[in-house]
Image (tube, rainbow, N blue to C red; front, side, top):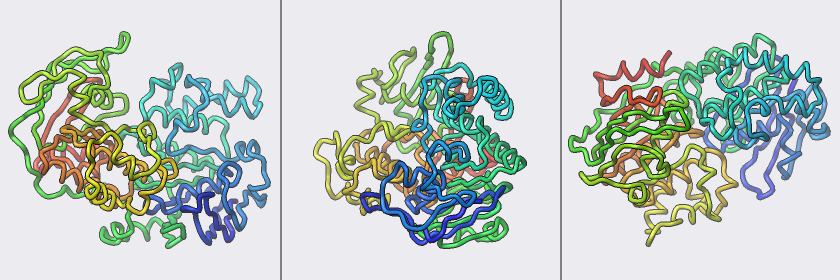
Length: 483
């Protein structure tokens, strides 16, 4: 049993944290932590897995216990044997360069016998259907594949408690279905599960209790039935995503530009002997917001890197306003917000990040964008100190302010609540009104329904489909996401 009794915690910089938390989690219970970005969800997961106070110094009052033992008094190796954690950014928990070693790492550190490690690895691969991930370099994995490896490394030692922070954030539709199946398997095994999530729909049949946090405090608790009874307006007012994708409604009829200015012809890219992209042809107009969908590893992020000039080993032609544009020219023409935004946050403050590399930045425009993305109060903070969702919005703000003609956002709603998703959608609309071309790599049906006017579907490195988002194509789009 896990208990948090009168827990108040403030980080060392005295920013964020949680106040007056009282929670009891019974063995075998699945509890969902939800709320706006920065509300304290990740802090609660760190309290439960012992990272607070062992790795995050700050002011802690109250007690967090696991089976009546105070976690603050337990060594981390003892906690790790009982509590397994999957972080929001799986890269932060990797210690090896290959997948097999990573899956075995925790068991090796706990001094499991070799026979046990091999048997557990075999069971993990079978249970999680992870055969395709064995024997691979960590650096060659997509974001979703990294998430699966992180989950496998935690599953292999078979802890009693699983703490998951945004486990679906970088996963495609099929992979989210697998996560749902894995969580159901854990429930059947009697495991205790604590999940901090913004994407809620896949948890409807899994969670037993929902704890809603607001500004570091527990604002409400719901059963699944009570939560589903909330109308759309009530959920949105709390910054919550839907728990039923069938209720998602397409935004009003979108503008469909008719005059392409960017064309891609016969784009092909190979990595060693593997074809990553093959014979991709595309024409895009100013004002288009193009959603790029497809399973993990289908070529979406690779296409984005080639498009903005970051990947140069390819064959094919890019033209802008009818003139060929080489990689160096596309670097000046396009800007990409990466899937893992930690790679592109360099400045000492959020405000400086938004003007980094921009010639003659307009202070008023920076202020407007920061306010629009609910970052103005964080403008003086170092980006590293922000929550995952706040970091994501900071990178998006920098992309919006960079004055490029083509903007590419790779999973921009990863880690964002409903408010953040709506704010980003509004800003993308403003970009299209300025005549920009916007590409959005996403697995987020709610965001596509809200923000995009067109979808392209990659599968196996090929462009399989390209269609406008309208009432006529609504079923086609929904069928891809709703299983």
